[in-house]
Every structure is written in C-alpha cells, then in structure tokens.
Length: 176
Image (cartoon, rainbow, N blue to C red; front, side, top):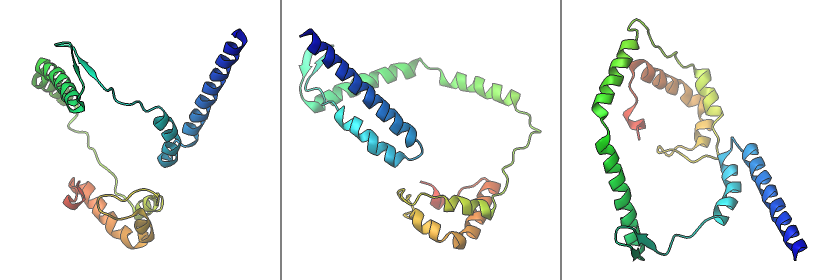
C-alpha cells in the first residue's frame, strides 16, 4: 500500500508539473496573439469551472437562502452597503482641491506641448499592419476592407487625424 501511494503521489506531481510547463509555454508562445492564447486557456477554464453554490447562509439571521435570485439580492445588498459605507468616509472634494493646487503649482506655463503631424506613410503603415482576423468596430468596416482600400483612404484619413490633433476635437461620428 505504501508503494502505491508513493507512486500515485509522484505520478500526480509529474502530471501537475507537466501541465504547468505546458500552459506556461503556451502563454509565452502566444503573448501577442490573444485568439490563439484563449484557445489554449479555454482548456483550463472549462475544466476548472465550479458550479454555483446551491445554498447560502445569511449571517444576520443564520437562515439558509436557496433561491438563486435571493442569493443575488443578498450579495447585491451586502456589497452595496460596503460601497456606501466606504464612499461616506471619503473626502473627495478636499483631496481633489489639494491635488489640483499641487499640480498647478508645479506646471510651468511657459512649457509648450505639441503633437507632431502624422504622415501618410505612418497611416499607411498602420493600415497595412491591421490583423484581418479581428472583429470589426462599431462602424462595421472590416480590417480587410481597410487594408484593401489603404491607398484610396490614406490622404483623407491623414487630413482628418491631423485636423483632430491640431484642433483638439474628435469627429462626433467616431465617438462611441
């Protein structure tokens, strides 16, 4: 029996070490590619999912809560109370005034801040490097279409981006 336990424990340890090494390697190999990384990590997530508790003990009256909606309500009340107590203690306005005074006292009004103009080459480079496997944005334009039309849209995009930077305004239609 002693030999069995020793070998079993050793086997479990080796399996655990092998899994750890495997997932560390996967993370390192796919740092820049979140899609592939999540494909590997989904194995860990799905096997380690725990089911929600079927009951919850209420500390205030020592009762048992069985209904999932009542559990949610209980958690909501608990965390809302904590946040409200925390916010009541904070003195945001006085801290903000002190911070504002400190920042204003250290800013040199003679210092100028400027952002250089973007070039068409830079915009072209960004568009060419778009990943065509990523999802579209809120505008519905796929990265593939943007890449295909790069040379047609670059002059207009460059003007829009530079105008936005120089005026300090962002096109309303592009805001989400």
